[in-house]
Length: 372
Image (cartoon, rainbow, N blue to C red; front, top):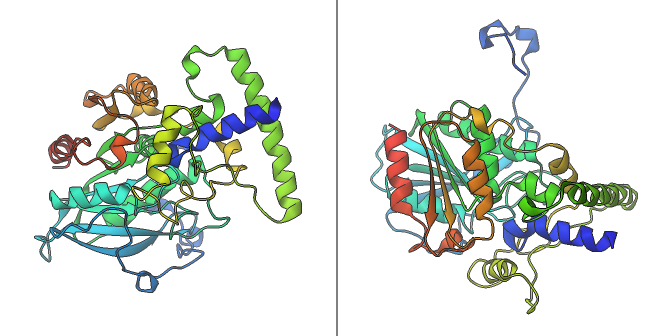
């Protein structure tokens, strides 16, 4: 029974990706002796990357595109696609948006689609592969962390704030699925982020720690199941170290069965078909390292969501199984400029790629009003 519960928890944890100190010192007060190089531990150069268009969505002639690299504070090099309107001229300083998600996806699947569309609407946009995934660096491959995932958004802001065509005072972020939770987590700590959009958001730490649909669950049952999962995953860590390998959790099933929940079938329809499959996506392929789950159980996201005072727009499908994540987080937000917009009739994955469903006009208006 423990193995069955663990299997259900792991499937739940990874379904949304594809299946599944305060310091008194000012910077000027830091001594020279305390300063060290910020060079990344592993360097990937943009010119080494293929510029061949391998996205699951068509290229937009209104937009220019090229790959870039930047690094986070852990020294991990991230690879991103930078999109800009073709009308952009040398010396222009545009409002900029960093984007990532869904959880388990790569920039060629969903975030790039959002980035390209928003670039066509006048923004400088950056769609990045998270640490350990896609074309970005980091070992072991296809692992994930609440801390580093949050940091990746701030690292993207680092890059945009120093870009010659971005206005450092007009930077926003957009997170899709599990990366919606990471986006809000970053916004809660990083005051450079002036506006945030989440689309079909998951709270990954809640999902992994409690499983799906926990609002009606008995607390004692949740705790008992979580303890069993921790014991099993902890034992797997011992085995991983001994074997010199990492056990992977399930990605999205390659085949569907009648008894699968509809939302898992929806994930399959995106990640395992021509609609959204990409070979670098762990949602489409291997899944992620099982040991990743422990961090999410111990380090909950959105602890300080109530302290976000910058504008937030949350989008979710009316019929999405995950809708309650956005509704519950929205209640935590105390800022005066917040909106939860429910997209009529949409399920979770409709907001991945259905251009006639994703409310891009609303996203454009929100960012233009709040990045000015």
